[in-house]
Amino acid sequence: MSKKVAYIISMVKAGIPAFTYREIDILCKNGFEIAIFPLTYRTGPYMPKPDWPLFRPSKSAMLGAQFVSLITKPALYFSLLSTAIRTHTLREFVLGMQFAGQMRRWGASHIHCHFADSKLFTGYYCAVWLDLPITVTAHAYEIHSNPNPKMLKIALAICKKVVVQSNFNKQCVMRNFDLAEDKIELVRAHGDMSDSNYPTGIKILMVGEFREKKGHEILLASVKKLERKDIAVWLVGEGYLDVPKMARDMGVQDQVVFLGMVGKDLLNILYDSCDMFVLPSRVAADGDREGIPAVLMEAMSHGKPVISSSHAGIPELVEEILVEENDIDGLAEAIARLADDRDLRAQLGRKNLEIVKTRFSDEAVLQLGSVYSEEKTGELH
Image 1: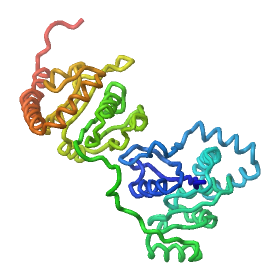
Image 2: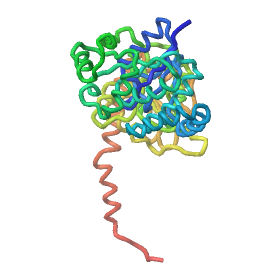
Image 3: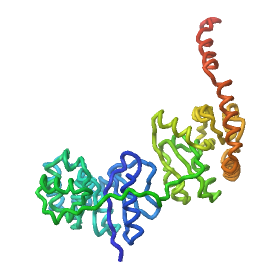
Image 4: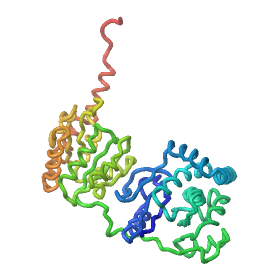
């Protein structure tokens, strides 16, 4: 029977940290079952694989867990609540009650936390509530300048092992927290990502909020239809649609990199580095639609070939390549055509740059100034 380990991590910066992703992947390939319990959740380059259960924080689930916990174990609930008040860890306690219920139903046999901070504090409440063994990987800042040393000492006291990644940190943990040497495990971090599924090859960039009218689902379905592992999709943006779930459901998650929101400098690098820009816009169910998306002009100004749809004002900017709205087959064919023809990509990129220079230049913007300068005519009514 495989060991079922609940991993408490953070996905605050964008996805799972690369080193944590690698660690989980290796464990899963060697007989462990891992479920992810993130304190915070943002999409990014490394997202949980389809067979990694993911339990996200939920206000309604947290509230419901308090009532259930209070009814089932009132004495323990109030004891832990008292600890949370004394140590200023109420948020971790409340979330811990949600996670504890989910861990129990999933069948967790062990809890592991990455970083000896709020992740460990949340894990502490789960471990005490469920009477499960808990371990933690302590990295650096939380060893040397932990924001809550009082709670850290309480949580470390119940840890079966404290994992560190250097002898220096091992000595610091022993000295600062009065832990026995046999309780500290030195495990070197694994940084080799050479055999990972990080997508490479023909790079498709799409920039846009995760909304129905942008057509993320159409792009992902087209990539699935092509069945080509040499195609990678870079998605910039966030929104209400769960696009990572779309990718997982379609089985193309290993070809998609979720970059979240990026700054101007990084976005310019992405425009320069991609092989093509795709935006399969469409009319949403509620009637929402595009004007002329600025991201198309931005991609064209970088001399990139673009594929978009015959939607709203887009044909006024993009001459080729255009497909019909919601045309998965047509989009797949257009992507394959560009992917297989470097010369065509260069030709269309030059053409697009010229279009932007002539039709959407600074001089064109100054036409707006002439509108502002027009004298008022007619009478007021």
